[in-house]
Image (tube, rainbow, N blue to C red; front, side, top):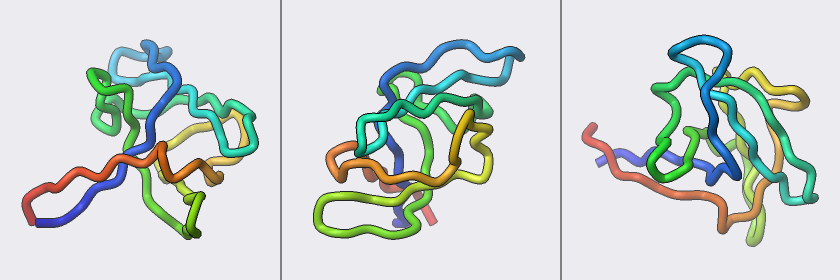
Length: 90
């Protein structure tokens, strides 16, 4: 089984287009990043958005997703507690 990584969002709302979602994620420094992403990259039921781990340390994880269209950086640090791992078939 392969692993996917997801970041806990503060909020997920409809985007400007039917297959788009507006997301809000709090960075480890407390700033909130907001932006848009395709709905297939979102788990609305659990308030999660797909992410790729770029770097990590004991308490924090640097995440990104090339599909994010953020109003700010699309690569940023979040707390390890904000990361959810999901197992998916290879």
